[in-house]
Structure formats: structure tokens, C-alpha cells
Amino acid sequence: PTEPVVVGANYVIFASTFTKRVSQVDTANPAIITAANARAFKVSDGTVASVFVTQTNGYTATAGAYTLEFASTAEPGTKITTTATVTNGNLPVLNVSPSVTVVNVGDNVNINTGISATDVEDGVPAVTNNGPVNTSAIGVQVISYNVTDSDGNTVTKNRTYVIQSPSALAVVGTNYVVFASSFTKRIGQVDASSVAVISAGNARAFKLSDGSVTSVGVT
Image 1 (spheres, helix red, strand yellow):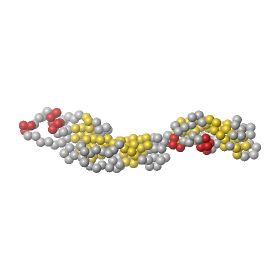
Image 2 (cartoon, rainbow, N blue to C red; image 1 turned 135 degrees about the vertical axis):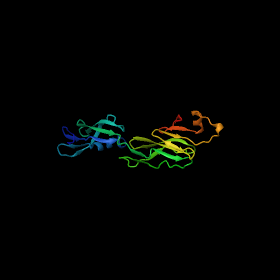
Image 3 (cartoon, rainbow, N blue to C red; image 1 turned 180 degrees about the vertical axis):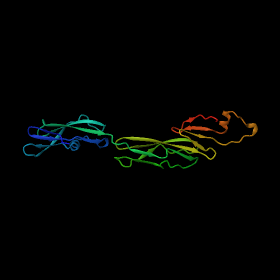
Image 4 (tube, one colour; image 1 turned 45 degrees about the vertical axis):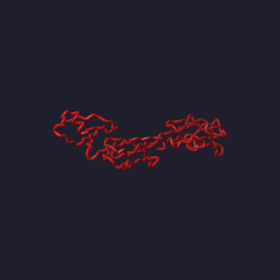
């Protein structure tokens, strides 16, 4: 495309549109002039003349479109406007695989296994989490993983850790996990009511997405 140009009485001035990511924005006038490739020339002999920024209209490190204005120092009335676009860039990509992991009571869990992140602009950004996993008792714990790139874009994903024991193995469903233990009763101790059977089997269920406790029934 043709570069915008404004021809004045004695000087001609050029400036181009440009795009910057949030992290790349420099609001200093020299940086703005460079980004827009703003420049001026004397019409009579083509000698280079300096330019200056006359309007920035709030140009800052916030996504949006900003109208910038430049003028020739030697001929301030010769002005040109252009547009600076600020973008948030691409979202980082966070991989958390698998999303559900079954471990045993007492295990020493490396919560960074299967975790990776990439970013088009930043390469390999750091991943943070709210670990560690407490494996002192059976249950469900959700660990959140976060990655933030240099433009401030944040992606969060969760991994659910199901903590089981040899006496209370877990059965993982689509949305819930159920635990129950074997038990022994003498004939005189048997209570066949559902409440008593659930209590004797220490049957429990948890929601995988947040670890919240949910009720169980005898089927």
C-alpha cells in the first residue's frame, strides 16, 4: 500500500500506521516517531527535516486504536495523522495432561509432570501453581496452574488429584469419584439400613471439578 504523505508549502511529511503488543508499547516521543517511521523532507532539495509528535490521544499500553499526529519542525503547519493499534497478542497455550491423576496416600507427588506452556511471542513462559498436593488422607484435591505472558494474558487450567488408599480404592467417573472400603461385621452388628451401610463402608463421593463433597447412596 502507498505510504500516507502530506505535502506542505515547503516540506513533505510521511507517517505509517503500526501495531504494537501491549508489552512493546513505548510512549516516549522518539519511540513513537520511530514506530510510525515519521519523517519530513524539504520539497526544494529533498534534504531531511526533523519531525515531532503533536498529538498522541492517550496512546498507552492498553489494547485499542490511537490516532497520532506528527508535524514538521521546520514547518509546524504541515501535519500528518496515522493510527497506532495496540493488541494483547496471542494467548499462551497451557497443557495440563492428564486432567485427573490418581495417587496413593503417602505418595510424594511431582505436580509439574505433564505440565507445559508455550507462547507465540514469549517462547516458553513460566507456569505457577497453588500446590503441593496433600496426600495424607484419601480425598480429592484440585491444583490450579497459571501462565501469564508479557502482555498480561493469563490462562488457567486445573488438574484433579484423586488420593486413594489400598483399603479405599477410588472409582473415577466423568464428573465424580467414589470411595468405599471393605468391612466386616458380626451377625449381631449388622444394620441393613442405607445410612448404616454407607457409614460402615466409609463410602464417600467428591466432585472432580472442585473437590466438593457430595452424597452417596446404596445401589
